[in-house]
Length: 212
Image (cartoon, rainbow, N blue to C red):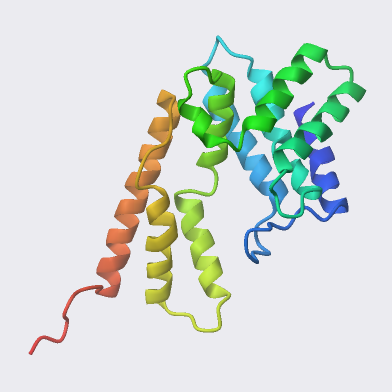
């Protein structure tokens, strides 16, 4: 079922012009690929949970950004995503209770302040963690390099500075709540710190190699 939902979402984005990211001009960044990876992270996070509605989290992960096909600037994408999801689930015979829970997760997934709210459901926290885990760490480094590679002037030093400004800064703090997500984020932080240190050393950043 999840594969069929993903194919529906991918087609919906393509037909309605929502595949290309509206965050800058990154032709290599596809909305459906982000959705697929968020679903992947969600599966990793829920696999050892026994006291939650796993199916609601996974279905919400699949639908969470499909509303970009309608919301040009992305400001209302969560609401549009929830509406598209509700229509699809109703047409495919899902229960009203399940639909209500999934659409609640989708509508609130962008409000990351709710991660620390006392009344936030574990399902919502897991969905937001999965969303944040994508496009950080190694994937973020690749993004920075591909973006720098598209510029008219390209240097290793510029790529290094871009990585420090974006990928490195994005991992300075750990916003995760659940134990597994915290561990995933810590691994990303370790990778980023080591990568930046190695790259700085390889480029001789802040090192006087021609002393008087």
